Length: 96
Image 1 (cartoon, rainbow, N blue to C red):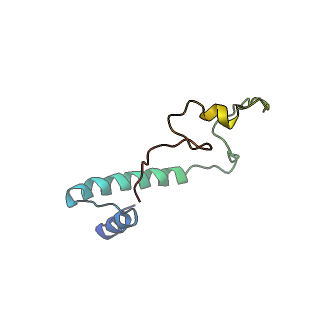
Image 2: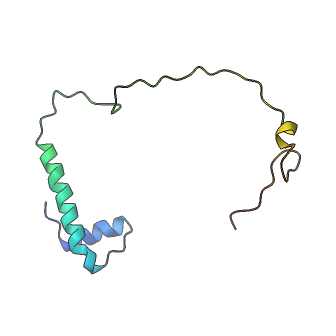
Image 3: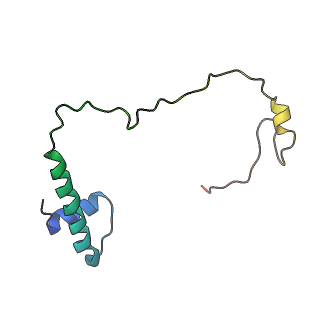
């Protein structure tokens, strides 16, 4: 598939990319290469291939959920440098 200048600029706009003119040729060649590869994949007969839900046939062995004793809020906050009785107090990291 051939990508013209207008299509390349539209793709860059949709992707919110600022593309200098010096990079346009390389990007155009790269996109054409990917699209040509995809068209090669379209030629492969996959009518007898079952759809995959996972890329691996391995089964994940999960452990059983067990209820274990928890520590109390007081014990959890006991060694906190700053706390207000219910939560840890930490410095603000984002400004509004």
